Image (cartoon, rainbow, N blue to C red; front, side):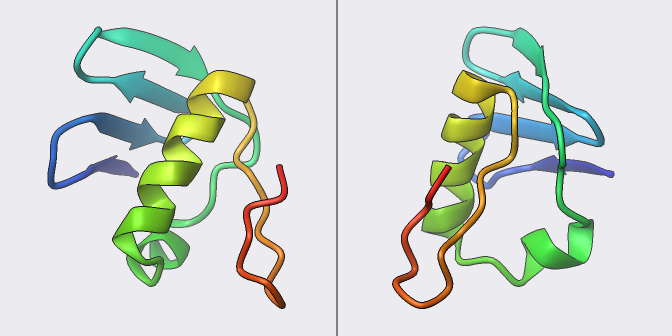
Length: 70
């Protein structure tokens, strides 16, 4: 898996995320499948990338409220 967003800010690979603006690479636990990401709204994907980059783990979503919980 190698996914880069349309704005070119994040590059997500299995187990890694790259901030394309700074070139910094960090390890990420529990990366979702490419199918999950493809069905995700773009804004939510961008939020999750930022959280994953900051925390080192792909965040979960509370499906009732739609809020990102981690």
